[in-house]
Length: 71
Image (tube, rainbow, N blue to C red; front, side, top):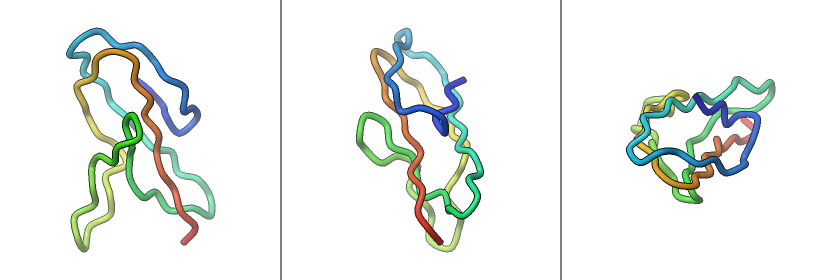
């Protein structure tokens, strides 16, 4: 499991690795979305909060980062 709430460092994954990404609760900030290699993933559905936890298939050197904003 990659707890990307703590790091934006790249990690290597075997081809087709199934990884669970979990965004932390950070006091004073709202979770916005995930980015993987700089591209937004798990876009929020209108009227619904964005998913803090997502399962993704990864391979190679990946940088996954949760994006937060001030409320």
